Every structure is written in C-alpha cells, then in structure tokens.
Image 1: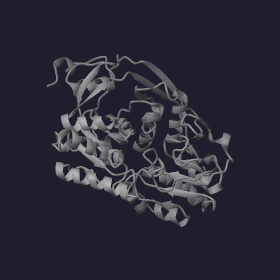
Image 2: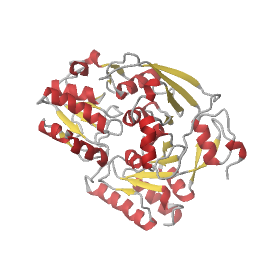
Image 3: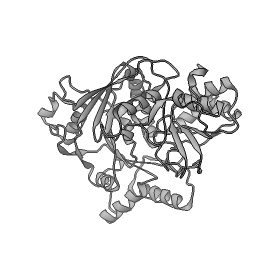
Image 4: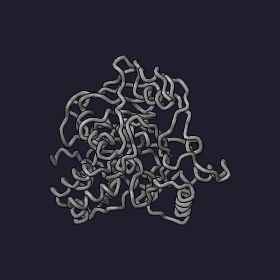
Length: 428
C-alpha cells in the first residue's frame, strides 16, 4: 500500500518517483531501498548461472512469481557449440519446471527489443536483467538495470531487490541537424561530451528538441550507449510515435512518470548538436570520438550493421538506400547485416531490403546480438578492422589484434561501397 505522502510527491526526479512507488515510501537520491521488481530477466549468457544458484539457494524451490520472470536467448543464437546448447537446455528445463511462460527462444532476437515489442516494458516499471544494456529500456520510461547473478536470484525468490537511489543529471540537447547525421551521431557526440566517468551510477534525463524528435529506433540508439558512460539508467519521456507504440503493445493501463519542475538535479549538461556532422568513435574507446571526415580514407575490411544500438528497420533502410544508389559493395569488404528481432526481419523482408543486401553480397544473419562480443560468428582476426554500429570498441572485444570503429549505419554503408572509411554526406 503506497502512503499518501508518496501519492503527493513533489520536487522529485523520475528515478526518485519510480523507486518511491516501488518501495512504498518517500525516497530521494542516495537513499537505500527495497523495491518491488516488475520483471526479472535472464538471457542465455548469464542465465544458466542464475538457474544453478537459485536451485542451490532454495534446494530447487519455487520462484515467487513466474509471470514476473522472462528468459531471452540472444547472445549465441542458435547455439554454436555443445556447452552453449547445454546451457540453453538448462534454462528451458527450468522454465518448464517453474511455469515460466515468457521464454523467448533463439528465433526471437535481442531480449530488450523483444520484451519491448511484446508489450512487457511499462513506463514507471522496475526491471532487472543479466544484460548490462538493460538500461536502454529507460527510453520508454522504465527503470531497467543490469544486475549480477545473486541480484537476479534474490528478485526471483523474493520479488524485491535492493537499490541505492541514483542522483540525476539532466542532459539538454540543443540544435538542429539533417541527414545523414543521425541518432548514432548524436549519441557519439553525447558520449564525447560527458565522457565515461562523469555519469557513474547516475540517472540521466534526456531532454530537448533533438531528443523529442527521435523515433523509437533513435531513442534506443541513444539509450543503448548509456552503459558505455557508466550511467545507471537514462530516461526519455515517451511521446508521439513512441507513446503510440506503447499504447498498441501494452495491454494494461500505464502512466508516464515525469520529473517535477522543482526536482533537484546533481547538474545540468548541454549537448550542442546544431549542424551535427557524421561522427565516429576510434579504437579503443567509445569516447574517442571525432568527425568521420578526420579519419576518412583509413582502410577496413569488415562492416557490421545491427546490435541493440542500431538493429531497427530504419537503420537498415538508410544503409540500403546508400548501397542501392552505389550499386556495389567493395570486393575487399565483408558486410554483416543482423536485424535486432524477427519482427524487424519481417519488415526488412516485406520491404525488399533483404534482396538489396543479398544482391550486393552482404551477409544477413538471424536476429540476435551478433558482433557485440567475441562469442559470435564473424569475429575478427589479427589485423582486421571493423566498422560497427554497435556500442563497444574496447581492445580485444571482437578479436585479439583487431580494431573496431563505432559509427552510424550510413557511415558503415558508404564506407562499404568505397572500401575505406567514408563520410556518408557524399551520398546525400
């Protein structure tokens, strides 16, 4: 039962409101609370450890509420070796034993995106999971956070989890820009501006006209790189297309949680994206960002469009336009295309994007995380250079002795045509 004090909250940030409601008491930044968890998620990577620890801790007891648990298989889908296959069997068997209906197997795609498409992520909800990029779901107003094995076991067993309420930084985006500058370029500009330590365990509220104009895909791009600056969670108030998307998918009623006008922020940061031009993060850090034109001409041999950062339909549509216009992919470039979910894959198939990519020699893989870590097909050998739309380019992340650049789908496509890093503005 939520107290009247909580019902009449004032002067609070979004995260303070969400955790006040979830804990049933009035809380502010830096306080410790036990909060009700609306959904606790495991994936095929990390999930088996949660299952084993839960069974050991409870002597194969029952979870508190199987309807508040989800399993997603997106990391190595389908299984690439016997160990992975056995781990996935372990999770499937646990789901059957516990009556967990929300199991999204290897044919569904990236977990967070699938849960969003299935209407399982509500504004104001508290969600935890074994994926460090769970927090990208904050772009629809959910406090979603990555957690360790014991955290998820606790949520499964008790339905609650302990949190320290994060302080909040208000990030104000200003300016206007035009294509081919995109949400990924805006995101890289943000990462460059705030750095990788300033938002450590902070809640970020993204505001301003450039953010308001972002599509759902664009907001997911921005939210997916909050982990890379060590942010705990980000929030964008659902509006327009995004709000309509949620209303169509979520069966129950929900309310948008907004910060109060007199909410207290740790600080306010401005990100100027006026006349933004294509950006690129050079090896080996996501904040090593420069305009693409500064590194144009550098050779590379593999391109990747996909991941939780840029795996939506509009990401592939812009790349296909460039490739179709050019009519080729450079013979020394391997281009890997991976839709985030099967829903996105269907859109691509119906619209003819698959035909465009395949006619030009690109490789299209099944929906999933793909080239985000070395656990996937397409990893790099020593000396390989990858242009990726993913969110991480740390040394050795995709292969020892290789280099990874992070950029937009437009930049990957334009560069794949030329066989060297290319500013996509020449194709617009």
